[in-house]
Image (cartoon, rainbow, N blue to C red; front, top):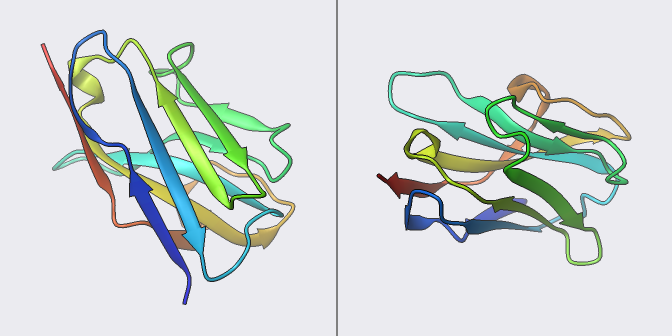
Length: 125
């Protein structure tokens, strides 16, 4: 059974930082794209950042470029999202996702097959 478990969310003041982690189990994702998405009530889930299997390919939403960094440790089957200079508009539930396809790269939600349960990030002004 494949599981993606996020951690690191919480409450932070504007301008602060958080580091999200997503540990995968049940299969290895060393050859698969992984990503971080976020969702607020009433809005579609959006891709915040994605990373290819080798980490040479990355994607960032315009709203987080220069503030967020995605990385992965294939030996630990884990993907990270370092978030800095956080803004109240970053408040959302953040989800980790992984693709089932090998050696592909995408930022589109429908191309990710496995999802975590989500972790709440709240940025106060």
